[in-house]
Amino acid sequence: MDCIMIGIAGGTGSGKSTFTNKIKERFGDDVTVIYHDNYYRRRDEMTYEERTKVNYDHPSSLETDLLIEHLKMLKMGKSVECPIYDFTQHNRSNKTYTIHPSKVFLIEGILIFSDERLRDLFDIKVFVEADADERILRRIVRDVKERGRDIDNIMEQYLTTVKPMHSLYVEPTKTTADIIINSGMNDVAFDIMSLKIESLLSK
Image 1 (cartoon, rainbow, N blue to C red):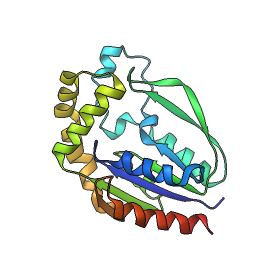
Image 2: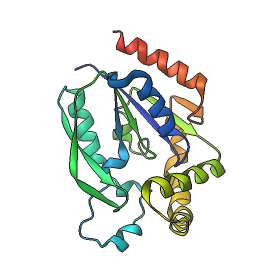
Image 3: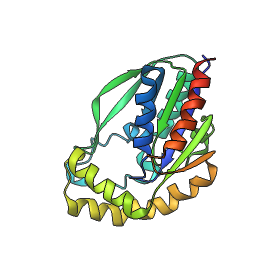
Image 4: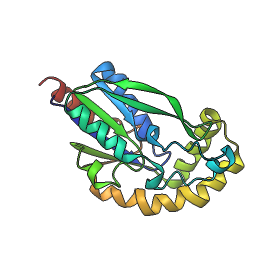
């Protein structure tokens, strides 16, 4: 099956989810979103306390091989069972959801450009960037509201893993992007991407 895969990367809190969600809202079921975050590894052998200390911003924390396998299957017109990650438990859920073949896929994640095999599957690569202060503030709001975490835990994780891993594995991949946009609320970038997707869907 012919399909287009668009990778949307950027640091934590950069606005990549905002940008992705705007596109999804614009095109509805014509576009399918896949989150790299759902492919965090299952860690049943660890206690909750041990799982909270895992470096989730390192590429090894993700089962990228499985995501690559799933994307290749979707390109062949086959459905896949996508894992679901439970951020409140720092572990993969026992549930999955079915992703069916689609004409346009949006694949979102901070590390999706760090693996060349994964990067090569994308027809378009978008990197969303934002000021570091904005990113940490957005992360705090998200983690408190959506993931039930406290400020001390968020700040410790940011300083020990998020910030250094961003410098090592996220920021350098900006050079591999086809398009770099400033924040997920960039209306001009959204309009351009919408026109591109419209042309792809009309074929």
